Length: 299
Image 1 (tube, rainbow, N blue to C red):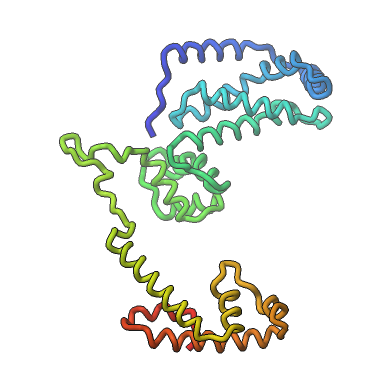
Image 2 (cartoon, helix red, strand yellow):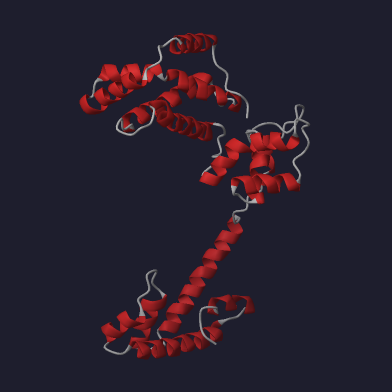
């Protein structure tokens, strides 16, 4: 993926924001808990501002770890601030834990979600296993390569799959995904040519002739079925229509209650009616290939 460039003005603003955030005073444990209680119990906006401002350095530190994914540092920081605000809203001062420890997870989660949404136009990770693979594959691969840049072999893929509790196929798929960036289908195949990648995409949809033929065949088969149904008794027609010609077909028991017979008797009548339909349809077949119409009918 190509990195998203930042303007000079945004870069200056980000550097100024980072300097100011890093100069914010650190909080003692007692003062931190006091601010958290004031915000939680009294909705004290000043307490929230001081708490968030003090731990902005944690957001910046986390954002620097994800800067190699090609996304603007300023955007990562903004997402991290969202996570920091979520942590402040959910933090429970009564628990014996520092706010920074609690907030670190929310900050990292917010940034990771942002990266997965924006790293590529194609959603990269949708499951927990894929997300873990996306953010850990490079690290584990570097550990295996030992700095030599060797191609990841089958043994290496198996090691990563076991370490992250994913399949080898998942590792191979993610490896290929990370190695290749997004490419427009409108892009030319070569600098001197006029052909674009989209010109070589095959259209697998049926052509107009196939659509017309299928429509005619469908109408013909429907007419056959209507004619054959007319050869059944009224009760047989009811059972076939309710059981076979509805999206939400009724059960044998439901039809038994409706017709005043047992469900076993309904099953017998249904079987007899399907046999009649099969024989009636066989008389109308002109092409053996059309016998697929009878696949749902008993022999």
